[in-house]
Length: 118
Image 1: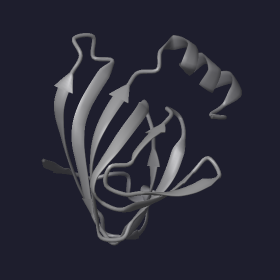
Image 2: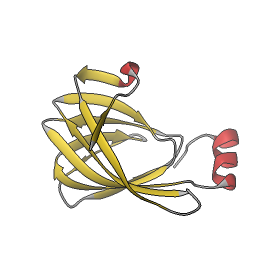
Image 3: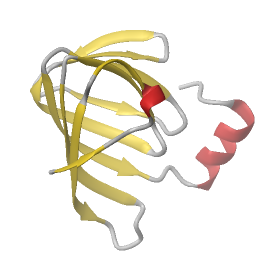
C-alpha cells in the first residue's frame, strides 16, 4: 500500500498514517475496489466523494455518522453515501477493503437540492 495524506483540517487528533492501494476498477471507471489502512491513535473526519462500502479486516474503528455512533470490528461491513461526512476514531489500527461506486446523476441531483439526508 502507498502512503497518502489528507487535508490537515480533517485530522482532529493524533498523526494518522494512511495507506491505500487500488486493486480493481470497472471498465467505465464507476466502481473502484481497494484496500486502506490507518495507524492510530487518531480521530479524523472523512468526506465521502462517492458511495463507499467498507469491510473491516483488522483493527477497530469508532464511527459517528449521520447522528449515529457505532463500532466496526473485523468482519463488519458498513456503507457511507457520497456527500456525507463521518468522524472516525482509530484507537490503534484499521485495515479495510473498500468498494467505491459513483452513485449516478439522480443521486448527485438529489444531493445538490436536498442535501445528504440518508
